[in-house]
Image (tube, rainbow over all chains, first blue to last red; front, side, top):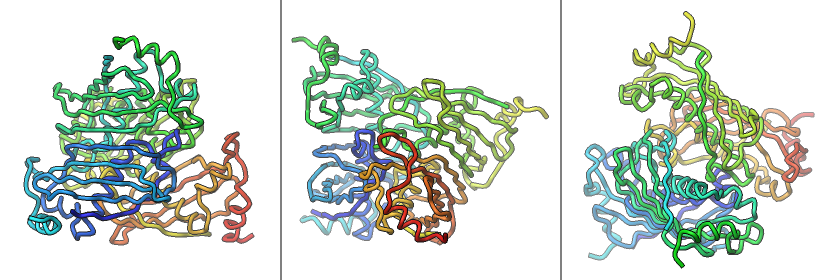
Length: 136
Length: 136
Length: 136
Length: 136
């Protein structure tokens, strides 16, 4: 298991007229969660693409427990529970400033060759670093 | 069961550098799907809010079968399978210009009082019109 | 001069907690305005990119006269006042359902080679069709 | 004159298929620039709204000198050149990781009463703190 956290500040443009963060914005928050999660391992998605690998999303799930509000400083906890293969699953928990769990999400992504768009193994360095968090 | 369809044109700002519609945009497409679906029944979400009822999202699920691309004219088929109560579930199927099913989604929403933010029954007119599509 | 119009329905996710369309959304509305404006001439931006030409934006200006609101059906009037060269300027006027002019915008774009990213002339077909609206 | 800086990391969802940050995203970056600029003075827009004052945008201008790219850590320099009254103008300069000035923007906002939506003076505390940066 690998877990990490990052913070995000809610932007005005992310709210809707209900006064909540628009429900479609969370996918962007997940993206920040997983990208910063990888960066903390020394892996950047930017470099991954430069190595010719992209990571399209295959599946997503979201549970909205309570609303996120404008200007709140949210804590995003990102976890990889299972050893990644050609696919990698991220789980997200989002907490507001009162440490209340307001949101849970999950995304399944696939490593794919940037040119052929076919599924592929991630670069060696990715495999190695990620594997170190999981028992064989 | 109630089903309806609507069309959407992919905007440039909805694509990402992979050349696909960004995975977080689909939530907005679902919104268009369900809003137009209700409008075809003579029910508008705008009026619902004016009657003091809002519809926050509780849960969402997404399956990305194939990418949507810039400028494509997508067909969104929105279906309500079960008779709504305080909660209402919408299913979405998105088809590209070649009639290929590229995406499936599901959202569970709750009717809530705009002031108290507590769950509530939808206005009579909503209940009546929606109920007519479901066997007792 | 070439002028055309198109319509847009305000999405919930485009509003902010002020109850207005978020001020950053108008750039997307301009995009719809100019893309549909070209389409009405038989020119699509999609094809332009397929011909190896992109159109990055160089400058933009916006005047917010009155707020656009959720679910409003807005009319976007897009005008090209001057004969385009390597650069092309679009003006936008946005009207609400009461025919009130609520917004004015302007964007200056440049035709550029997709590979080199250097400014270039648009494809012949673009030049020909667009030129027909302007006196020599 | 009052000037301050803040940083922003470009999100994947903010890029478009040209491989650039979509031109409509900059308005959101300006928002972050001015909100963090005020926060550094001990003034938060969140509190301003709680005091019953909103700040709709009246005018905007943008100059796109060079593209911002995915994952870049951008520096936003926000400046108030003139003493604010009922209106307040912010200027933005955005620099990429090579300290290159890639973008300039300007927005004119108005303080308005949240209920009446009419222009108004900002709260005393705002006036006092902001005034201290300008010669009488």
